[in-house]
Length: 320
Image (cartoon, rainbow, N blue to C red; front, side, top):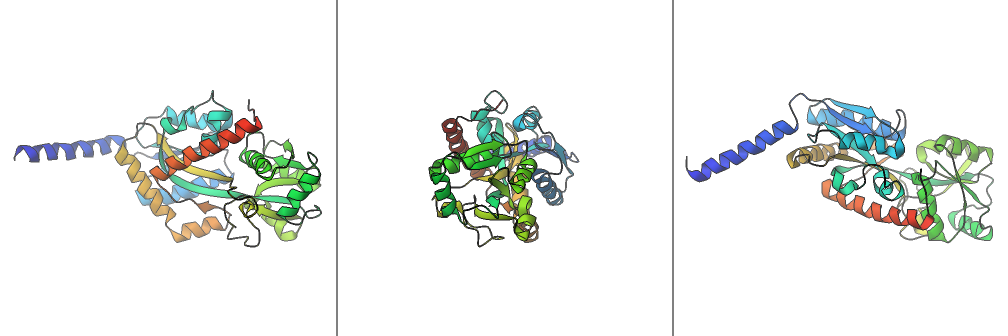
């Protein structure tokens, strides 16, 4: 065997050994979710884990670690071995926490985590009670301008995605709305239905029944385009060009995870997202799949971090 063949054989053996060390045969993969069991993030991750398990031929577990603005889950993943067996189902907080909670991990999501691929998205609906005076988005903006600071807009909490979506909306529309934060979406929705607040950014899954019985009305969606499930509900971007605010989830590994492992996981994720049956099952719950692998996720995270960092600073959003 000549010198060139020896070098090539050694290189191939090195790659093979790196793969073996990175993902030991038979080792289960754990996806860490920063939210409690039973919520949208949890149920979507479990659905994905089942499909990924079939695609990879490995057991995949879901570990719920809520707390500290999702930093509990992030810290656990950052401290894990970078071998592809502990992953993070990251979300918007990876883009907002560096500005809103700079003292908590990850301090620099783009350096401390390796992107695998975008996964889910869920848009919000701007919902009001049926007796609200405005009948469409343009009417809502006109009503808010005529009543500055008098329209109560609920959120799931200070710094929550729908709170930041509200701040972006207020600035884009040039209106002053009274923010009423709650501890979660359920109490905010209860107060909306009781008439003690007037507006809320809710997911379709949260309000499908109320939209059907007519007690609530959707004036617009925060997605860039109209939702397939609600073709008659316009996107805010149709009135305020460029507006978009969604809850997104994406899969990450700890920094230092070998590139072949990341690639294998990314390819498996892409294969699952390409499955029409899987896509349809999520669409029925108002959830969409986001295209894109490691590079697209890296670019998306940079864009989201810049956008929401600016909103947080301009709105002076303070988290504790």
